[in-house]
Image 1: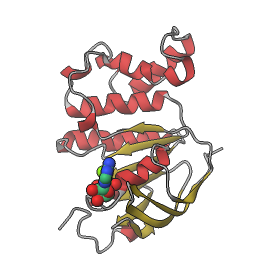
Image 2: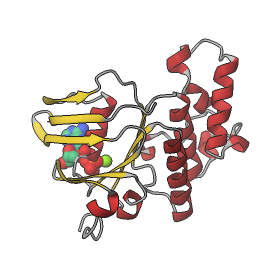
Image 3: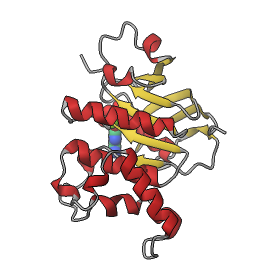
Image 4: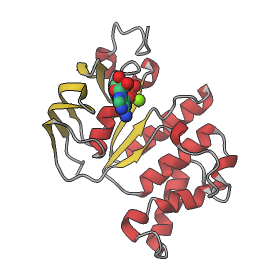
Amino acid sequence: MPPPDIRIAGVTAGYRGHPVLHELSATIPGGQVTALAGPNGSGKSTLLGILAGVITPSAGTLRPEHVRPAFVVQHSSVPPTLPITVGETVAMGRWAHRGAWRRLTRRDRTIVRECLDLMNIADLADRRLDTLSGGQRQRALLAQALAQESGLLLLDEPTTGLDSLAQQEISEAVRRAGDQGVTVVYATHSREDALRADHCLLLRDGRIAAQGNPCTVLRGERTAEPA
Ligand code: ADP
Ligand code: MG
């Protein structure tokens, strides 16, 4: 059974009284890949924060209420010198199930291995995160999120700052994650990137400018990037 649709109704939110999202309503289809498109500053990260439960809206509702999402923050905000391996990074995805100081079960180890395989980084398991390329590191973070076995995977600008080959690798990895039947939502300011999704929410100034099929939504948008 696919995960349920996520319904955002009349959500207003911001920072210290400065409103960013204005009575935003949208539906995110369960079990599909949705792109949150829009220029920088349009509210994509704020909306992801609401879906992740780290930002509380001042008005509006989110359904269903009890979701435990896996959230991959923008990778530039991950310290580049974290002295842990790829395998350990992905194993951390099991902490929510296990607690940090418990030994991994055989099932945990199987899941970690499957997630490494799915992201094509099994051969990098013993490498330190800080020795990887940007695209490899991003795939390690994606594998960590997948290992949480959440029904909702949230990704903030997963391809931003990567070269075009790595961007393509990440897009394909996001697609494979979507093919696992989970609901995937990724923010992007790239039109090309947004066109690869099943569904698209186009944000402008904290409001939904359009939602639906990416080709239709982005028709006429020369680019989601700022002019
Ligand atoms: P996007 O991800 O589309 O670039 P954001 O959601 O990050 O957009 O930002 C939307 C608006 O909220 C911008 O005007 C930004 O300056 C503001 N903003 C984002 N984060 C904060 C914060 N922590 N404190 C105050 N304002 C913020
Ligand atoms: Mg952002």
